[in-house]
Image 1 (cartoon, rainbow, N blue to C red):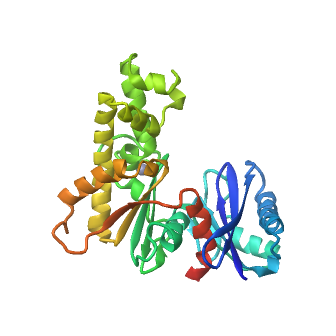
Image 2: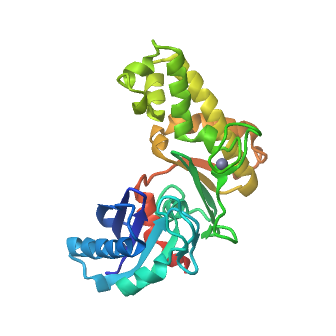
Image 3: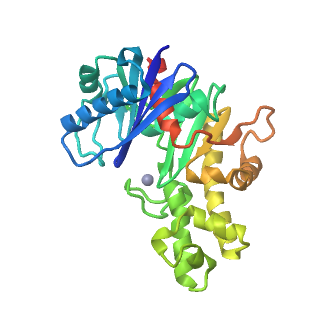
Length: 318
Ligand SMILES: [Zn+2]
């Protein structure tokens, strides 16, 4: 039996998964990333994480065909270099080649959002499609594009940043430097911020109770929970937010006309409560709305495992 290892490298934790040939995760291990620390130290720790994972699963490391890594930042998947990355503070990080030298097996790296999209394509909600776009609603709006089974990252490996398309010209400021980016309106953080604003206006708002009087506990889920209890304000917030979500997805559909758009992030656990309104709005506005083979809109199915599975599958791209 051969295995692959996928590593989802984040600013706080790094998770490695041992994946078998059927794209099943057979063992998983999470360690703290422990930033800030020198790049060489983090590389050694990542190598140790991979070896410990195998020991834990009683698999000999020689059975591992390759290690794939999903990391934030612009990643040159051909050279294994990571360009500047705010979270890590490394410039031109030679991650791929350095880890290859430590592990003695091929190491492939990719941007984390692209890796997660590839995971949904290989083993999740976009499995079996040729073209797919994965949109993750979280702190921002992450996105990955798969065209004919290949990750599309653009000529500078910095493409597929749909969260930063402007949908409200001159709108809310974004930390990318523009105003009115999609993620400032459609991320789950944006919905949480809308909720906080509504709560500050109304001390009797139900969401105060749901968040135990603590604004830092307010998330997108607080709004969904208030909706479940019939709260009018929550419905209004949700309806306005989901229009922004759908507006962007409709644009994505018009540009790519993919077979599937996968919606991920914590809010995707809401299922039809979220997808129903998105489909309705896209159905109304999509350019190809009278076409026969319409783009399907689905919830992500892999959750946090998408990053690990996508990273583990990266060798297929090379
Ligand atoms: Zn932006």
